[in-house]
Length: 105
Ligand SMILES: [Zn+2]
View 1 (tube, helix red, strand yellow):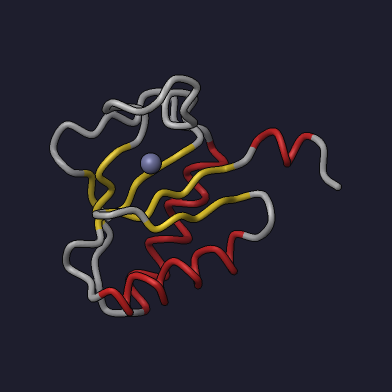
View 2 (tube, rainbow, N blue to C red; view 1 turned 90 degrees about the vertical axis):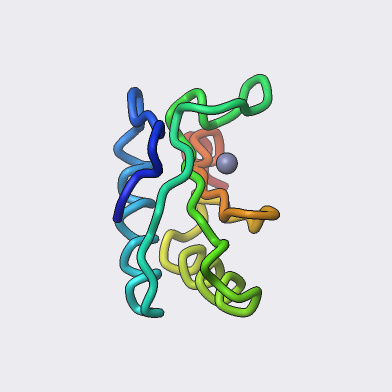
């Protein structure tokens, strides 16, 4: 696992660190290295989970579309119901849904 230059982990939550560990395992299983492209840095929307330390983005430009889908599905399956894994144009966004975890249904 490595961080892209400029990626700032300040304020990253342990729940998010767990997601990074799981993502790293899944990338490795598919023969790819994990590059984190954003943690609490970068321009994200107001109220974004990035600013709160609850989200990471992982690089996908070295993956095929199929690999990206497979890896994202596997990360989501491993992390379970309190995480959201979303495929974006050039990354996978992974966030811990603290609200859902606080009030599990
Ligand atoms: Zn993101």
